[in-house]
Length: 288
Image 1 (cartoon, one colour):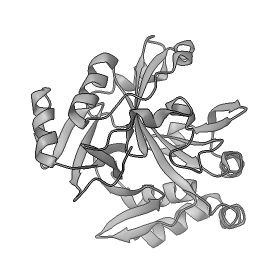
Image 2 (cartoon, helix red, strand yellow; image 1 turned 90 degrees about the vertical axis):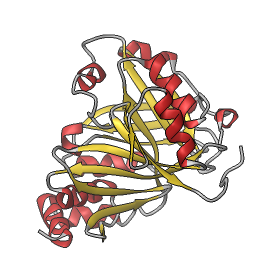
Image 3 (tube, rainbow, N blue to C red; image 1 turned 135 degrees about the vertical axis):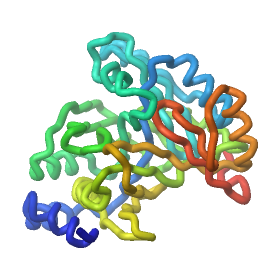
């Protein structure tokens, strides 16, 4: 099946009228802003993230304890990596961690101009919603991971987030830029999602995200603000790789090896359940 056929099949599965009528109103910003990784050892994983990538800790959310997890959020340029760790065994995060070292990412979090409209679109497409967070300056909707496939998807919006250096709820609101460090790591360029049927999964995510599915070099891709999603063949459906832009690839590989991680082909393996691919950049693109 070609990508074009996969896209048409995804449209036919839920009705092209819903795809077009609702999608036409949703062409403002959509940013893949944050990748959430699950770990069973938050202190070690957090220390490794800081030591390997030279990033700062922006926020730890004390309110998450009520849900049986702890977290830590780190700016990677103007995007974020979040670590979550279960403190109870009866949590979804605990079950996810038990999948093993190459479990993939726990969640992909997209900022958008209207998260409520996207919630309505998901309901129209018969996507199950597992959680909503509704506060005065923040709204988020999380989709059922089995409906998303590969990883859970969240759409959210923080008041004032139009400015990429402005308030961001998951990073503690305003002030997170105090933790921004760009001398080693400068941003997230791409995420890689694996599937036995990658073109079909690409088409499925294009339907969810309301963005075109494009074929490049034989792979399905979706472009969103801040980065690209690429879909490749793999044994199971998971978000397996995050490509980060770094100033010195060899330096980061040496840091990772020194922390006990396997490295190969410009990748740091099995950190937080995924691979980090290191993409070189010519100069520092951001200043804190």
